[in-house]
Length: 335
Image 1 (cartoon, one colour):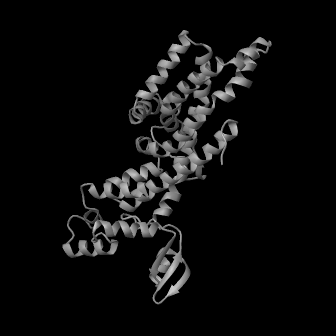
Image 2 (cartoon, helix red, strand yellow):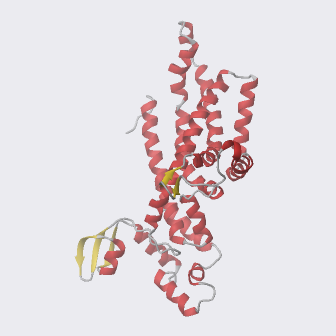
Image 3 (cartoon, helix red, strand yellow):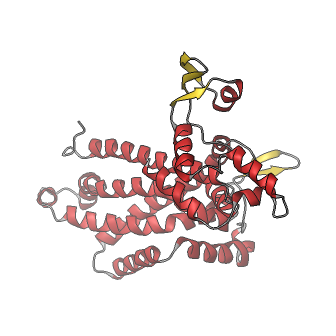
């Protein structure tokens, strides 16, 4: 509810008139008023907010008409007079620009954003953990200082800056050698073979999106490994003659990964939101690309719908990670 409240009123504080953008600058006053009334934009802000929350609610009271039945696709629970208490799916309304249901827009674009975020997180996690372990085992050496400096650089560089640099170098100037495109989609229409999967188009945006979490995972893994390796049970295992590599992988790594898993959980959800500028730079048709276009055209239902969806995903992932964290760490218990 907090996300809905903040985004709703922030959107209405933006300059511009969505009705004018829908009707065109040369439309007459009567046309604009008709569109405003149809969309409920002529009502006071509190009334608009109430109606939007009512549309989101799975239970509500509506006038039991054929129009409302087709709009909300509800199931009647109780009927009283012309009204009915109904059960329905949250209604995210329709796009101002395309008149398509926002739920359909999300379902059509979530796959591209999911694979982009998942691949970026997989890249950041695997590479970050390995590099962090190497930095910890090579403490105070050239490699340790080099890898830590690289991680600081990765954290400091904004994602959109890294995206522009990576796209220009590997997707434009060196494209003849890398074979990678400056822009592209996960699925490409081929005139002969139809729709084909193009995984190479995923490489540059995934690396760009994964740089910041990679840098953080490197530092977390390094500091956590150094802390675990200094514990008494590690020294005891070493004194028993167990090989060092076995002590690291079997005893130290599992306990060192707990803070890393927590960081991965937060970043996985955040990457879905952070993919917006990366998708725009690489022309990757996902939720981020759609949302930026919606902001430019003041398409309020799409902006609200995507924001609410990302917030729900964020909460859901954090719940799953709490369960995984408890399974890995015997000191944590879920009630």
